[in-house]
Amino acid sequence: MKTLLILFIGLTTTVLAQDNIKFAETINIQDLERHLTILASDSLEGRETGKKGQKMAADYIANHFKNIGIPPYKKDTYYQKFKVKSGKHICKCEDCDVNFVKKLFGKRKRIKGENVLGYIEGTDLKDELIIITAHYDHLGKHDSLIFNGADDDGSGTVATLEIAEAFMLAKKAGNGPRRSVLIMPVSGEEKGLLGSKYYTKNPIYPLENTVANLNIDMIGRLDDWHDTANYVYLIGADRLSQELHDISETVNSKHIGLNLDYKFNEEDDPNRYYYRSDHYNFAKNNIPVIFYFNGVHEDYHKVTDTVEKIDFEKVETITRLVFLTAWELANRDERIIVDKKEK
Image (cartoon, rainbow, N blue to C red; front, side):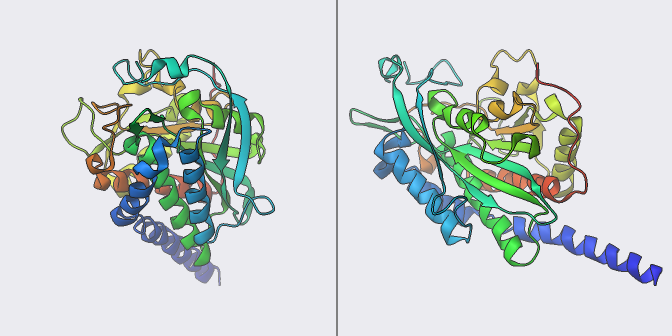
């Protein structure tokens, strides 16, 4: 009898391992391109937080969650609304069109935005939570110029939509995550990481139960440091949890095979990218994070950051890596250990 039980457990583990690949493979170029063609279209007018295009993008994301079977997290809404004063414009390079309009970001004003919450309840460990973020806002429309933001961060946003669908397909097949997963596209990033800051100050789910944040911000292009698309910059994985870094490495080595580039992960990195996207609001609350990033390029924060320049095969590969990493974090027996503290 004991032998049969061990055999059953072994077979179950094998099936679960195979299922994660099956669901990862539902993340595909066609769906990613379909979503991004809409979100980065001129009709959304650059998705500036507080403006019509950002509201249209929020509606598109919420409708996607509804269509794949994620219920509203509260009554009949997917939105966490916030009203805050705008902060400084966040830029990842010095040579961008913000020099677009720079006067438009010079004054602080009260803006209204929404984070869109797709909460997928777990099973036996449902009180613990993995949060996956990307910012769906961009720079907006100024005069006749539309900043479509296909890479920044349309690419990360559509990744979250596909990850949400993959987890829901698993759940419907009776193989949902043990820990809960919150897919949360946020707005306000371009005005000072405002949406993620608001969430961490007003968490819907307790921060102490949040195991990790995986943040996706620009994964669809190449930068000047690479001549092949088979890479992604990882930032922050080992800052708070060596275990998170090790899991990330193992998942990539076993299933994906990307070049994981840690160039910008050094504490003395002059670009300070670790502090410049939405993951940092989780990290400063001592929640382990990984920031997935392809680096800046010649179209960063320019009107030329458009859909036809996106490498969707690259987006597909990185999105599958994020999903499989989240799957491991959500389904392992023990939550990862935080062995360092944010300074």
